[in-house]
Image 1 (cartoon, one colour):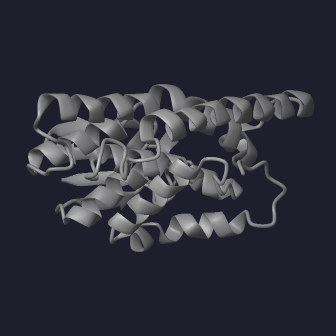
Image 2 (image 1 turned 135 degrees about the horizontal axis):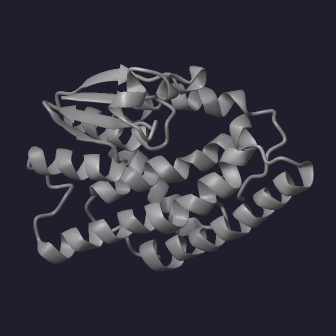
Image 3 (image 1 turned 45 degrees about the vertical axis):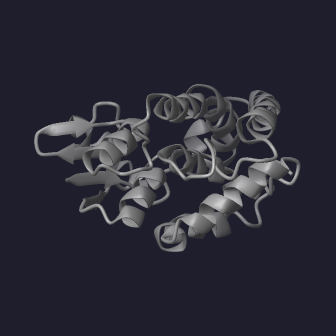
Length: 226
């Protein structure tokens, strides 16, 4: 198998974490997002969406992070994607929630416009309003994550055992570290994040390049969630 990815891509990171942590034999190929390689051949033909990650398994190809995690867990018969119908449905549900609700406002409305020039809005006023709107919506979703999905008792998103939902969620939510959010307003979220990071032994190794990006924004005047 082969994974096309970039080490700071928020959607590549969950897949890379799972692969490295579980020792799944996958070759990795970096697609340099910062030079626009995802818009150029040969990658543009590999994934017409021009996004990473992409998993190739022989002549079979997957282009969505959530689907890749499910495929890898199922192919390797791993407990992080439970066989029990209701437990698996709960994992699917929370992964869909992160994709459909949380990440849209959190990333594309709030953080990406601050960090990446190609997300800059056409006027300063529009840009400021986008970030304000995105932050308010992101805080609403974080409140739901804190109070409903995690609550005061859950160690991980679906109970006491880590699942691919945790791998997926932690990869997305730690985007907030790029703007130096500390999530102190959301103690259950913070506790869950700490639990997942502690449970993934390869966390530091896989995220070395990502934390280089975090350090590079340290002195920038960015809006954070605190």
